[in-house]
Length: 272
Image 1 (cartoon, rainbow, N blue to C red):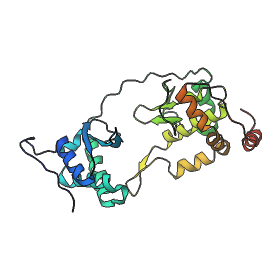
Image 2: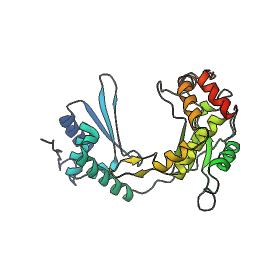
Image 3: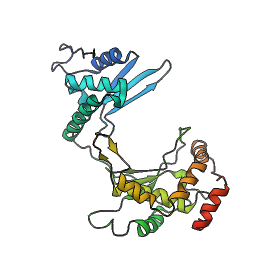
Image 4: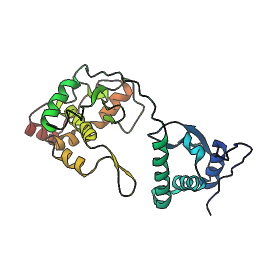
């Protein structure tokens, strides 16, 4: 039997769920310690992760969830319990979030500070090469080229993953991780990462038939696979990722590993 949300009109004149109400519902549903807070993120309206010791399941909800009707409350609880297997709950929740986010005012964005000039690579120069090679005629009037910048030079805390690049559709900015701005990272690999992010600008994410966001659709994957450096870029990343993560975490100079297969791939394509 689904848990019900204990709304107390004495706490909220409109009968809307408070963070305490949400906490009580989720503890009853999930059978674990839960802490709920409200936020203002439109891009991640629901964020849930385990924190602390002993562990507490921390759930941060967009402030609009303070006005969520009962069926949405129960759908969110169900989704947090079993994930995408709760298909009806997911559809209901996705539809409600989409409708509410459209009603939310878009916060003003201050212009980001851009640093396209790196110590090894100038993103502006690389972008000209990539655009001429892979995107001729696509960007221009009506379709501006995204702004380019190296990311903030701070040590990463991740031990197992590294986001080499990103495209922000709201600010229209491509950001590459500064760990790539090193002499032992091949120029062609930086260009490939840049091309990948430009494909995100060309083919932005969209909702699929199952209401899930599709970030790498068929057109995206086909164009990326057609890139002349696709094979060796994936081989190089697979081999070098541990070293890149270590360099980003420790702030040390990256030293590339060597392999016969990679040397053959690079040799066929022609050096850096």
